[in-house]
Length: 231
Ligand SMILES: C[S@@+](CC[C@H](N)C(=O)[O-])C[C@H]1O[C@@H](n2cnc3c(N)ncnc32)[C@H](O)[C@@H]1O
Image (tube, rainbow, N blue to C red):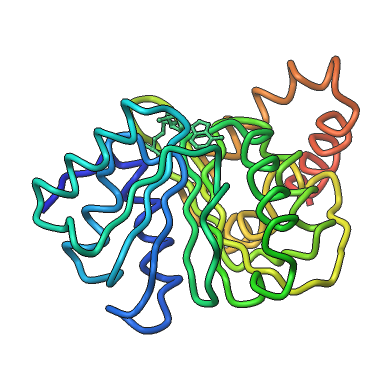
């Protein structure tokens, strides 16, 4: 079985939970690099086929080699492309975009909507693991009509990572600054005494103490959070 770092295990867990019928789902890993996640999805029969895309040729080749070596050549495709360009989406797809900056993720999703239209998105799940700009990603998703199904957090080699699973419902909504910066589902998990989320929030509180000097959304989110924690 392909071994994954803790961060990718967290992403995989969200993919597993997205799959409605095991063995009949297509997983698209955007920015697949080494291709480990795609291999694992096939090894575990979470997916019956995978598509990997990477903007650069050498990571795309790495993904292809990993899939071929694991014996999955016939159920996988690898594209050297920007985001999802040239990949027609299908209902039921689970699209993973992990280990990338939030602005890049927004750009990829926006272009996918433009290319495929909103109707295809209705049955597509996105599993997103932004490396930064979480609040911008969450505000974009809410405004565009996505709803947050789940969010998770992990601690991997001294760094906290978070992951969100969203589906498109077509109804635009607005998040509070606290929801945008801490995560609407993570706030609920915090209130249910989730220990990892509590550690993550303590870390964010420290980080936001510094970031609030130049970011009014972060400042307002931190004030809201500290008020709610004090209650
Ligand atoms: C840090 S790696 C993350 C790899 C893997 N997804 C993970 O989470 O471990 C980011 C990968 O995304 C690719 N990438 C960056 N921007 C991209 C884009 N717009 N479209 C496709 N791939 C992209 C990079 O070439 C690189 O291989």
